[in-house]
Image (tube, rainbow over all chains, first blue to last red; front, side):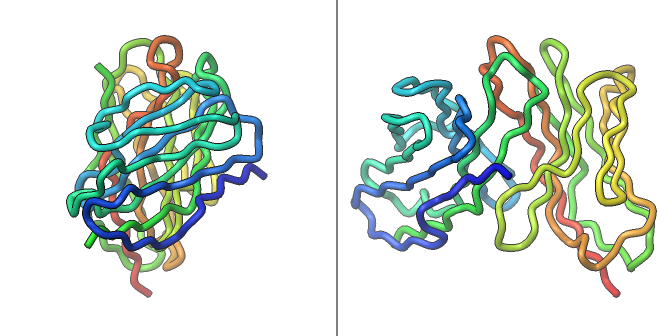
Length: 115
Length: 114
């Protein structure tokens, strides 16, 4: 079974802090994604990556950055956390982009609170 | 562009009732369609998928048929159980220039009462 592991289930940080959310997958997937999930808004794509050191902005990249130094690991960085970044963050991975019928596999999420 | 519209919840049903959650889409290109489920406190799990017109995806008693003519992918189950209580997301994926990203609907909360 595909395993996507997010480093923390719950995280509490303070405004202005630099926050790192880590995600690791064990299926040699080329693609990795970061979403945030908010009530009534569904899932919104923040950033994704289709290869090591490659990244693409999603729909709401402002205030975030990402890092992919190794194929299995994709990090989301909140450069200076703000209260409006309090949310559930979900990481996902999938096989290569050219195969449209490949599903994404999700981690269990990190519930981040910014105080 | 690419987008998914699904019926708003919450949906509340009694056990053994029939479930339909509507999903329609717009897509550039030929999409694959997915239903994901999110149980409380968990991430999303793939429930079923369909990759071409008239395909029927099925899993755990849930079904959805890819209808190209109506651009729809409605989720159905004949007899729901309390354990089906979750949030359901419809999604599409188009290959090529979109880099394989998924486009999600906003989710439909389902609560099933005994």
